[in-house]
Image (cartoon, rainbow, N blue to C red; front, side, top):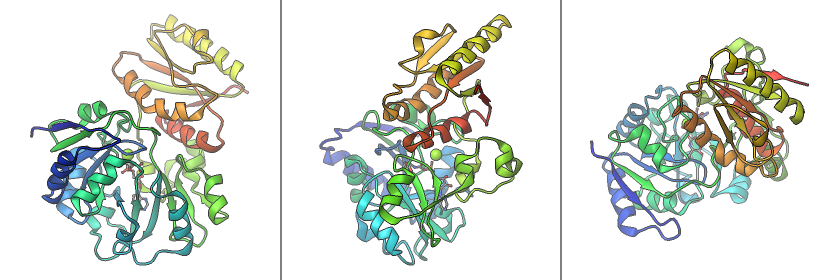
Length: 356
Ligand code: TXA
Ligand code: MG
């Protein structure tokens, strides 16, 4: 299949491109598009065959449900059984935005989209291209991140091309995304809502609006032991898959930053003298301290936003090199840092060295 790539102006998306994308989607085809979090791979959420195509293009297990994207609050009513009052408050506060909520699904949503579950994940993205495309399609759009299953989520159209070129009808290229990590997922089907995946909308921000929320233990686990030796079943099925793992062995170092850099330097030296190629994930503040085959700054410690933005690109860039081992710094787990650490620890397969 020839994948058409359209470069769109994100401030005023070209109407003909949105129309073209909408038509592909209505006919059951797939279009990758930018959102404020990461690029999504869109298909008609009400069409089981489109869902099958999405799973096929990504190589994703079909029991891992898709998020349904809408562009107007009124679209939610037909997708869900009820909208709990707390969900209404959350919509008012954060939609459009990087928040996905889980509801009891209506009969309209096929099991092919929800991975067989009786619940459905819904989000209204805050991106003119995404909103314009969904409107043009005239149907809700199921969209997982537009990467091959097991690779880091795409933050550039070029990443989508690397993974999905020839497998989908179209890519809308809206340049680099703003946030860089996937939306926060909040399960609204229980009395005390639960965070199933941390993201830009933090626990504190949510609790300001609706009071106490719980956090699925898989979100904050630092070792396989904490998730019952890997047997724990997270509520978001996708959290169990070993996502984003780079080809090289990734080891993260946690502790006071000067001790962390000393420990990374020592291990880098040891690995290099044993003949390994070593990469280091550093920050603007620390990158000059290291000597290795590849030292990459992921962002600045004074702004967690820059770290979220840089994270997946750095992991992808390492995959293009021949480094054998990547040693990485860690970040505070407050606010956005919680989401960053969740992604990094999973990418490292829980290989975390505590340096005190
Ligand atoms: O930011 C985002 O959310 C991006 C953009 C494209 O919108 N999308 C995204 O989708 O990250 P995906 O498919 O890569 O991740 C969806 C996650 C998976 O972990 C999946 O298991 C979970 O959402 N999920 C979807 N439906 C669910 C449901 N009904 N119950 C629990 N978890 C669900
Ligand atoms: Mg994904």
